[in-house]
Every structure is written in C-alpha cells, then in structure tokens.
Length: 348
Image (cartoon, rainbow, N blue to C red; front, top):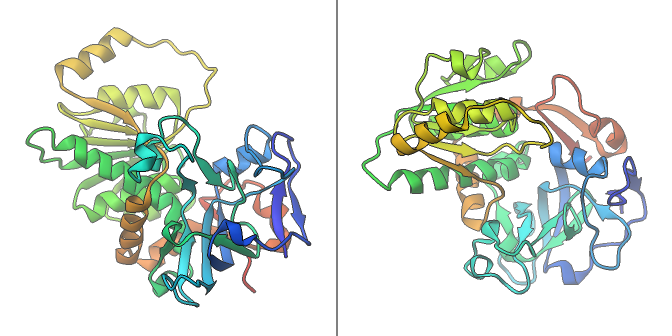
C-alpha cells in the first residue's frame, strides 16, 4: 500500500512509498481505509527535519496526524464497517503518569506519550491504518468531505473547555472574544466562539484572499491593525499566531478578569524589548489569567465532532483551499501563499 514517509531528523526526506506493509494487528483492532489527511505546520517542521520520531525498530515515519477514514472492520463491535472516523493523535504513556491514567493524556506530565505521525506511532498518511476503538472518533456521515478538520477542531475544543473552567473561578459573563491569527486554528476557534454566542473579533495581517470573507460569514469582525490599535477590550483572547509581539500585546489587551489562551507556538530565538513590569502589573491588578493549550483528549475530540456537526458545511468546506491526490504529495506538502488548509486525498 501507499504511504507518505520521512526519515526523522533528515531534512527533505519526504517520499511516497508504494510498497508499505499493511498495518500490523498490534496497532489496533479497527482497520480503517484512509479517505484524506490534513496538512499543517507540524508536518512542514517534521519534513524540515526539526523533529519527529519513527516507531521502535523503524527507520522511517509515516506522517499525517489529521485523519479521516472509513471503517473496514472492527471485530470488537464498537464500530461498524462504513462508519466515518478520525483517529485520535496522542496516546497515553505506558507508565502512565497521573493525568494519562485518568484519560487526560493531553496533559501528560512526563512526556512519554506517543503521537500518530509525529512521535513513535505511524501516522495516517497511508492507504489503510489501524487503531484501538477508544481512539477512533465516529463522525456524522454528513461530514464526509470536511471531517478531516476534526483534529484541529479538537485542539480549539480543548482550549474552550479550559477557558470555561478557568472562567468559572468567579462570576463570569464574557461577551467579547478576540482571536489572533486566521489560519485553521484561529478560524475554528472563532467558529466555536460564535457557536457560544460571543461577539467575535479576528485579527490577521492578511488583507486579501478568503480569510476576511470567512470571518464575515461567521458574523465576526475582521481586523488587520496591530493589537494595540484595536478598539476592543476582549474578555477572552485565543492567541493562534505564536508571534512574540502579538503574544505579549494580547496579554496587556485583555479586559479585567480576562483570560488569554495561547494556542500558537513561538519558534524562539528572537529577543524584543518589552516592559515586563507593566505586564506583571496588568495581570496581577486585573486578576487576569494566561495559559497555554495544545493537543486534546477523547472528551475534546467528542466535543469537536459535535461542533463540526452543528457548523455550516459550506463554511467548513471553504477552509479547505487545496485538495491534492496522493500522487501529487510533494505539491501538497509545499506551502502556498493563500493556503488555509491543504488536504491530501487517498480516496479515488
């Protein structure tokens, strides 16, 4: 079978293998036929050799962690042939730590977790893959063309879950949300904010392309000014750019008792001048909270599936700006200037 693989740590080793072995039964009872795989920044960093870890005993890693497929067989009876599913990316560590033991493997304390297509588990960019039933998320059949968005949606579902938990430390009646960055994570974060009835503002530096229209279609407001020039005092900020200046500016922009969720990852290595004392004063005197969020557990994946089922399917389809057949994998994994979400299709 076909599989898109890399040699971890070796830049530009991306290759389409035509004779990849069938997934071993040890990988999971559920056998799935791949329909599509989403591509994100993590994939580009793995292809660049920045990180990635092959399964034990393997030289190459099958990449792809944003999945969509149809069940071929499940001898446990949990799922039925034909069911539309996505595979949960992270699996708990074998020790396990206290959080992994409680099913909160997204909050692993010892970093011994594994991740499909990223760390020590084969990914989903192959014709067929296996997974244990508990890590297969069933999707509404109506999501057959957009269900590949489930993984990034699970990330923002977790972010909102934690925002709401933190918010209930006191009487909490948020009204205004600011999302910085209008990539897939930012747009999906805005979607979940509008589903909650908030007034939503999205900030991105892009002036053309589909992003402004996608934001407007949600009933949200699109901005291209700097954070400091925004005439908005948000109760909640979901920061999705990872840009250091934006990260620091939104911490000072939040309203009193505001919550800032950092969902973007900075590359590091860049120094900027910043008044840390002023930031400390803002956070302490206004009882504000800043926290980081990444990955998701089963609860968040289920919440994400519900959110996608409730969303406008045409809007979700518009997030997918390129679909490429697996034979054109190299082109698919080459970032384009107007890309939001690129999808590699395995189905005919």
